[in-house]
Amino acid sequence: MVSVPPLSDGALAAAISPGKDFDGAVQRVKRAEELGYESVWVNQLPNTRDAGVILSVYAQNTSRIGLGTSVLPIYTRHPTAMAQLAASLDEISSGRFRLGIGLSHQITVEGFWGLKLEKPVLAMREYTEIVRTTLREGGSDFSGELFTARWQYSGPRSPDQQILIAALGPRMLEQAGEIADGVALWMCAPSYIENEVVPRVRKGREKVGKSMDDFVILASLAICLTDDVPAALDAFRSTATVYSNLPFYRRALEGAGYAEDLAGGEPTDRMLLDLAGIGDEAAVRAAIKRYRDAGANLPMIGPFNAPGSAGVDAGFEAAIAT
Image (cartoon, rainbow, N blue to C red):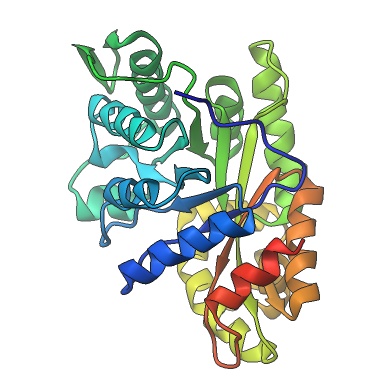
């Protein structure tokens, strides 16, 4: 197996989930590979297809482009099952897979699944320890407060397979720097990445004697290539409103200086334009540059349609021109 190569200065990723058109998504992944995207990522939402199955199809229809989850919630899979999935996807893709994992949210973990989201930092540490040890050593003999795994894995595995953690708060960010190979971010403004994410991650890296070299800061941003900016802002506002009312995201957004922008119940245009790339090609490219300049070495674009937009495929084409 080969390892995922180091990131280049201009690396760009894309979020490509099937939605209602699986075949169309596969064609977009192929096109992303042709255009030179570094990687494509799939997010696991509670009510959609299994991200691992999707990525196995993407892997079999491509040969170079990296593949990743951004992210898989840890409470839907025991860490041994997560390790099995990660190793299998890495084998299928010939070493192109990165595993992104996260907590999800209390409303989902407790309301949907009837589980308990408690001691989140400890939960992530124990979970990552089991997955990491399994991938490196072929098994785990770990008994923790929240997770236990005493087992052996006999399938092919890559000891250096990368693990990213979805992190927003200071303790999780610092821990990610310590125990992971990267962080996966969503609804994180460039100012928050620069002033909170990078310093916290660096502190965690320094704690264990590691540098920031090759640490992945995957930052997702919505983009819409359009000549009708107000319509696109309205389309993005509905999504941003949902996430801004979830506690983890709310704290990060307020920490980035958007408390007043959220005081009216939904995000202001100013906040949305900071978070996304909406407008002509220059606006899309400028948004990606803002994220890069803030410290995100792997911006991940998620093109969306809105009235007056040029379409998702045009968004992929415009973004890669950066």
